[in-house]
Amino acid sequence: MLGEYAGSHGIYDFATPLNAPQAQRSYWGQMKQAGYYTGFIGKYGVGDKMPESSFDVWNGFPGQGFYFPNGPNGPHLNHIMRDQANDFVGKAPADKPFCLSVSFKAPHVQDEDPRQYLPSQDTEARYNGVVIPPLRRAGAADINRFPLAIQHSENRRRWGVRFATPDLYQASLTGYYRLITGIDDVIGSLRATLEKRGVADNTIIVYSADHGIFNGEHGFAGKWYGHEESLRIPLIVHDPRLPATSRGKLVDAMTLNIDLQPTLLELAGVAASGHAQGRSAAPFLKGETTTGRSVWFFEHKFPDGGWIPSSEGIRTQRWKYIRYTDNAAPFEELYDMRADPNETVNLTADRVFQKQREALTRYTNIWRQALRAWKPDQAWADPVSEQDLARDGLNR
Image: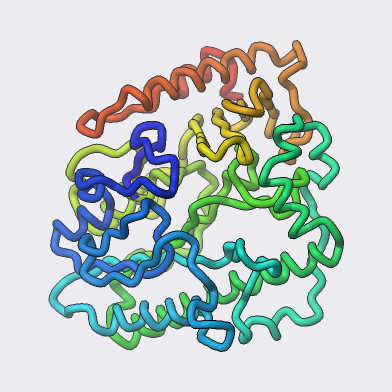
């Protein structure tokens, strides 16, 4: 939304809404100021006050929402959002550009329901008889090397509900993929509406997510920690203005969710008012660069009393460092992502890698301090650079 780290904007819970200056800095706030017709559909998870007045069309809902908001015989949420999205595009003023944010609940579980994943009926037949293969990354037994604070965590409780038996694993993953297929169906319907309206050739579609997910890896479910399953999210950009030779390309570069705000503004032709900590990914689309970040910081602080241990750390092309900051502290993790992409061999106690651990710990401290000191009226530069990696021998 803001292109800013949580360590700077300070929103760590579900109750705190964006304040007025933050709402103006959001990508939709700046687009609306630039003359865009704006809409929001779906799950809005920031604060206990909905920002209806920030949009021309508001069909958002607070919290998690329900897959069948009108009861078990009513329409599925994916279908409700599909109809709302198509209605927005069909009624958008012809003399104004538009920005529509469609925030799917899918494929999130329904936390209040023992079945967890509740797909629409029309997606179920497409997975009948399908057997989901077993995990190819770290298995459930990997949980045994983690401290008790993590073994007792919400990640582990959710693992028991979703993956503790082979049948639970099959039911959960099948439901998960059905919900994702439902998203595909909505996007297909929306693209057909764009074609019908005659604006498909001038509408950019950006698809991403708010976090990754553990589907049983390490004996976890859910998200929150700094492992690859949780950190990695999709980023698909469809820009019909690009020549055919520039489409369908996969860019192997590290970008972050804070990059979405400046990316959307640049693609929309809106000059950013103020600063962001993210970097526009538009140069990747134009073929101007293939190089992303070489080092970056990640964080998750959640004041829940310890069921979700908070953590932070540093990721480079090769190395990852994670440290826990509350009830699981002083536990740390250090991984050589080149030799151990599944993150099963913790190197923090190995003296051979003491230099790497010390450097990555120092980077984490520097980045944390820089986030706390930064103000929105200041330009941002990542406090750790490629030169720092080279100096400390971490660039290879």
